[in-house]
Length: 73
Image 1: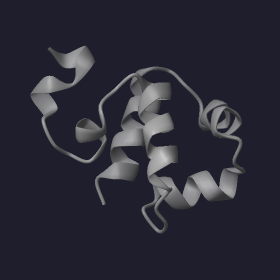
Image 2: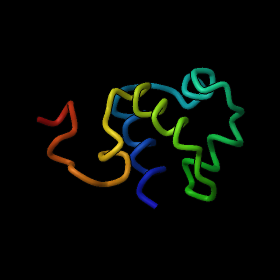
Image 3: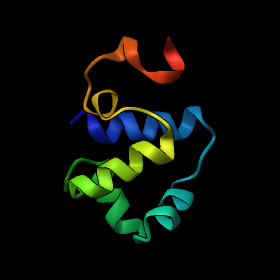
Image 4: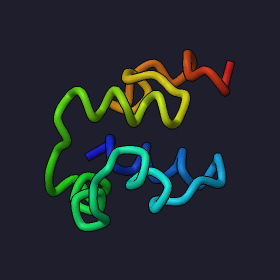
């Protein structure tokens, strides 16, 4: 249950809105909400797009390699 928390933390830290991520991914708010609450998991292609949107690594989003997070070096 790390993925959704990490995405929420990054959205807040970067002052980005869930609405903007929904538009970027072309998904509705309820779909994004399920991913952020870890009740459903997005496809890997979408996870990669989320990492691009947030300018972070997949490892960071899944709770690994915190030290290698691009903005936390």
